[in-house]
Image 1 (spheres, one colour):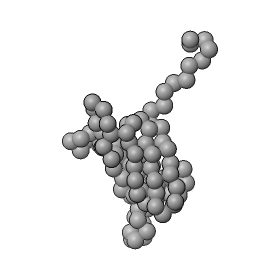
Image 2 (image 1 turned 135 degrees about the vertical axis):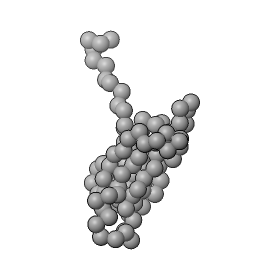
Image 3 (image 1 turned 90 degrees about the vertical axis):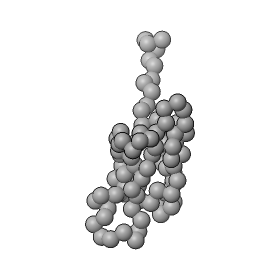
Image 4 (image 1 turned 45 degrees about the vertical axis):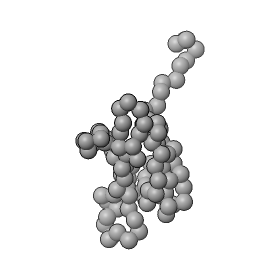
Amino acid sequence: CVSQGPHQYVFASNSNPNGNPPGSWAITGEIYKLELDGTIIGKFGHASKEFGGFQVVHMMDCRNPNEIVVGEIESWRVQRLILQPTPTKTSSAR
């Protein structure tokens, strides 16, 4: 997935298909944020069916590079992840 905007990012997954050999869960299930030249900026996630984990990523929507929507085919779910939340304003900060 390539984000929009003047500074674009690539989001890629090494999710774990069911056909992978035993033990592969320890090194899969991550989503990487990269520069267009392939430089890794960061990564998150782990192989899991729980929140924040990924089993088989089927689609990503990264129009907003700080809010990623991830659809999984094996877990039959969609997760919306906010990568850099905006601070909330309190009444004293107005």
